[in-house]
Image 1 (tube, helix red, strand yellow):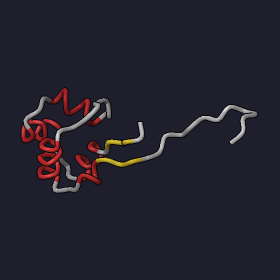
Image 2 (image 1 turned 90 degrees about the vertical axis):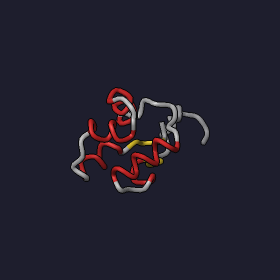
Image 3 (image 1 turned 135 degrees about the vertical axis):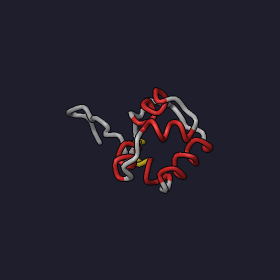
Image 4 (image 1 turned 120 degrees about the horizontal axis):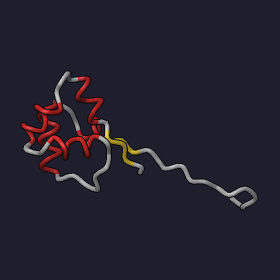
Length: 78
């Protein structure tokens, strides 16, 4: 996926615990873990807002775009 979730990095930088963030946001620790690992298809703006408030950060601190690498078969024209 081209979107990289850096929630674990921000938690570490803020010396915050996942358990405390989950309680503040109002989601389960399991769902927070899925979000941290990037295994979710979407996030509500309300949830993103609460995460940013708790961590005192911007959405861009949590989500980074990186292009997927495209494999080119040998011998094919570019």
